Length: 435
Image (cartoon, rainbow, N blue to C red; front, side, top):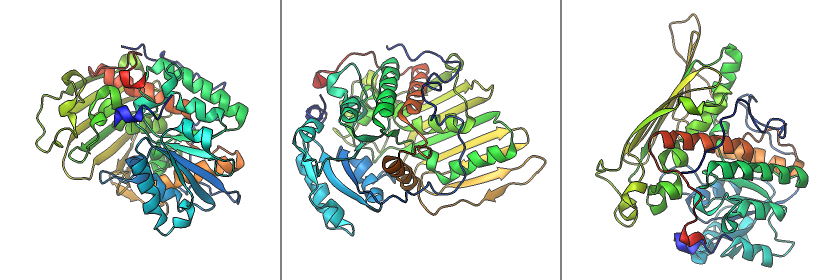
């Protein structure tokens, strides 16, 4: 599959340790420090039709048994959208997506949707009437997010074609310094061409994270300690590349990156690279429900296999401390995910943001915990697309909570933690299937 996907696409020093956001001067719309209430993201009153294309016919855009993600079912419920392209080297799979969704309640929105083996083929072939206005990029991270590898320059090529982008994480598998340069280039292109280039860190739209953010503002007290626990089920993860650190990023960059991002977002502060200490349980620990070969790590070189458990501690630039505990140990389908935020007199608990979000609060000068009501009217994916499509139609990006340059900071920070735990990091070399 990876070798087929190459047709789709044309020990690194990490980013420097910044004392302040390097993009703040160039990017006045940076989301760092922005706070939000708990209401749903704004819905555009504009009636313009938005034509949407997908790069990748896989699970993140069309659903898996493993988790709640499925961009297509959220997007087809949006008003005034039409789907005009699915790009995947597996044309049979892409066509099956079109055929299946054409039979559903929103089938009219899929009528005439074309399939292509590559985005280059789409750009050469598609008519003006069916040319997508916006592209959803959901492909393995080693196949995009580059400036230096032409076959992985998907974001730049599509932005040059004038298309808005929503990119799934991980945003790359290239050295962090290269991704920093890519972020700067994409910001300039977005500014010049009036494009939205966003990244799918959807927890920023999660009602529990929104509520925790609002509570911190209401309390007027900074976090002193943030503890994240992300415990993943593994027996339904069948993608071979997921188990390869240099193809997926490993458990921190591919998965726990959502909590790295949430910690940045809630604290309003960056992690200090030189403070990070981490330790891991490696792949030598046997997993009893491991997916059978060749669906899991059995075909991955041992030194590139993902860790079973990682524990990291670190300090934020604000002076707060934090820890992250990721494990790859649960069975079934439901993850265990929880964040604890401690400060002077308060404790905020964010529970299960993926499935059944809840927030528990102990206020200053109190001995008691209370459950805080959440606005569950729209899920986090729907609100993410509310904000993205509103920005596409109107140019107002104020509700887009993670632009590419912001996501590049989470990307580098996730690699810092992985490196501290002893995982291999991208060295800038190019795999044979990408040449």
